[in-house]
Length: 339
Ligand code: PEP
Ligand code: MN
Figure (tube, rainbow, N blue to C red):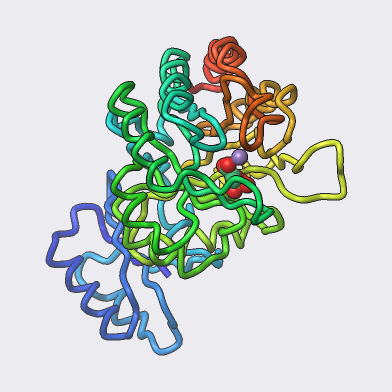
């Protein structure tokens, strides 16, 4: 449930309500809105005396939260959450859409720095590249590890781009936090609850990819794990789901974008690279994602896709990216956004 405070409620009124809900064994999550403060009460509500809370000074009303996810829900927070990304503090979830592009993996310093310059020149806000790679086969390239993170940090220094990179395991979190701006949770790890809880203690934004077979509610409950553990900076990423269709690597379920925008205040980005598996399909799905209301894109871009160590078939070239960006801006403007 949510306790909605009256407009102008004082700090002591809010503290009083927090004390009360703690007495009933609940945990509070305070959201300070532009007009009023609301307090989400989390936990088992069977023994809560709602009347006692409702009659506390400057409480306007108590509203039940119907969704299974609570703090991630629009019912708790109406205004969209903006998450500041990287050295430039780009507000993802605001009016402007943000494009993050880069190779699937950091392969070498030369490759990454050259790509970063092209990605920055195209007008992207961040570069993506995995240093720790979750590969289907244990024999495939697993990433450069901490060496890759150091290369990513050099790319940020050179270009000012935000660094988005994956954290595959709990023990990698301190190292990834040291070098990256946004910590990516891969699709395979969406329901790795100890990882999600550990990321709740991190101070960097988390980009959470949707599991290939997960429902919207499961996706938002995974986000809830991170927020409930203390980190409210969660960006949702649709990257395609597994269906019976075979001409694509995954089926990019774009209808989830407007549905998520309706159900949650968190920013939503789309990854059309893993969402299709084919570079020639990526530009059209980027355009469609922005038209559908996405706050940004995460896409794979490689200097020489045919020589990529992973996911070359779905990587667009820097030239294709540069040609795509003005189109995305035009589409963003057509749907009341900008780029
Ligand atoms: C990636 O972004 O390179 C990646 C491994 O993505 P996903 O977790 O969506 O498969
Ligand atoms: Mn990839």
